[in-house]
Amino acid sequence: MAPYLNSALVHKKLLIILPLVAFVAMAFSPAPGPVLAAIRAVAPPPEDEQPDINSRLKALYVFNFTNMIEWPSELKKGPFNIVILGENKNLFNELSKYNSKSVGTQQIKVSQAADASTIQAAHILFITKAQSDKIAAMVKKFKSKSTLIVSEKEGAMKDGSIINFIIRNNRQSYELSKTNATKHKLIIGKQLTELAVKVE
Amino acid sequence: MKRKLLHIILLMTVCLPFAGAQVSYTNKAILYYQENQYDKAMEYIDSALANPKEMNEAYTWYVRGMIYKDHYKQFETPLAESRSRIKSIESFKKCIDLDAGKNEHTSNAMVNIKFLAGTYYNEMVKNLDTVNYEKAEPLYEKYKETMRLVDPKMDFTKNDKEVYLFLGAQISRKFNFKKEGVTQKYFDMAISVFKRVIALDSNDCNAHYQIAQLYYNYGVETILSLDDTTPLDKVIEAQDKCVALFQKSLPHMKKAYQLSNCKSKKELVKALMGIYYQLNEMDKYNDLNTQLQLIKE
Image (tube, rainbow over all chains, first blue to last red; front, side, top):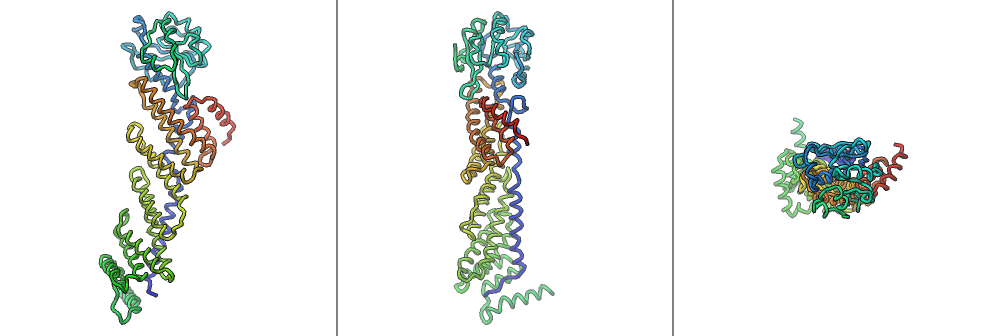
């Protein structure tokens, strides 16, 4: 049998244990980034601080409406009022981001009203789901003021709503009543009509 | 004095079995090796491979393995492409093959192969970060290939899962949702890595959770990236993409929720609620909300 090199070399071989132990310890440690990211992004109940995608989308839709609808010339001065009737903190926060933006020469002003009687004038009146029973009354109140009535209740166009948010195939969509718009002296743009899931 | 004595003992140890014969290349290599003259040691041990009397000796290959191993440790660590390490592994493997039936050097050669495999493993771990992660996987494959030399039937499933989960997590951290092209590349890569974990174990809660989270976050970021300059048709287009991503997220989060062994039940219920909420499936969201109130954690 040939001689082995020396005992020191045999000892060196034992070093294998150390790095493997080091690896095992590392491999079992939790991955920090994505796990935390998940906790941040997932679970966004409406009143939570997480991003509410639906409210953001609605705000984007509403902001686009301002450029796709023609209001009568007498309403093209002063602030451009967007009023939310009812409590919707997330939607209000999202729409408020447009406060500094303009529609033509008019600066957007977003407000929220808990009581319908306090609303004096609005270019766009967004009636929350919880306030849907007031749609007909609001239509009547603002008919002569060329207010765009926006709602989020199935069948709201029968009550006089002009644009009604509905859910179709998990998507935030809208239906449109050109008849009701005409009653409010509003001219609906072609593209807004084309992108609606239903037009009356 | 001690060093001189060591040399004399070594010379006797090395030369006695070959007394009367010319000193072999192997033994010359050993002498240089002991002097830490690696170039000479490598030159002689490689010459031994051309010598018919030494080339088929397991011991020759064992010595070669040791010389190249120490050369790697001294001069080529942490060089991923170290040629000395490769030569060392090849030599120990050849030693084992030639030692079959005798088992004089096999166990030591195996220990050394495992050690060298471990160096690949450790380098892989060092590279598991957001900058060097692309180097990690080839090193891991090299580790497995080397370990299979001593145990061809070794099961790497558990290790594979851990490594891929960690690798996927690192790739996920490369995301920058503001840069669409870059995002898509890393997103696809991370999904693919986590899916490999699921291919190994369809009941891996972590992998399902990570995939669900990736799809979900991508969906959220798709909408968050829109602003007041986005025309309505593009908003609708982005929403379609977002919904498709949430729908891809859902089955994985449902599976993680069903398995419930990677996160707390409360976290998983909240995560699932988040997806249903964004998908406007409010009945399911409300059912889970009721369930959430009953969880005491």
